[in-house]
Amino acid sequence: MEEGKKPGDYVVTALAGAELPLRPSLSLPTDLLTEYLDTVNRTPGATPPGCDALSLVEVHLEEELSTADSDGRNHTTAVGVRRGRNGEVEWFAHQEVPGEVQRADPGQNLEWRAEPPR
Image 1 (cartoon, rainbow, N blue to C red):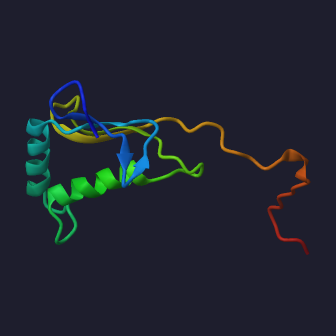
Image 2 (cartoon, one colour; image 1 turned 135 degrees about the vertical axis):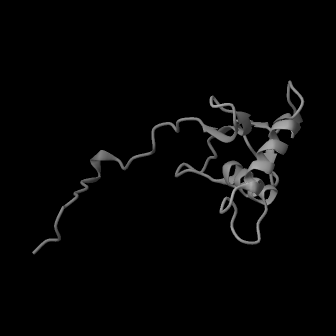
């Protein structure tokens, strides 16, 4: 992980030893993170039983940074907390649009049937 341009901003270069080529930005400014955690902890039902807000943030970070698409890559470009349009702190995650998914060779004589053959 590398320091970002502003306090609380980071660039994630790898996760669990695996390089993240998109180098997603991680935004966790102390004031916004604290406000977000307080809000989640005060909201009934916002966290699963036995889980606090910080643990939930850790789970979300792990999911956003480790989940791979059908192409085997993670597409996250930015994740963290920010102040939303309504003035409240919110969780956000942005992903790049994956490129064209590899399709079967059209010359393979494939056929799709809506009903099983009789």
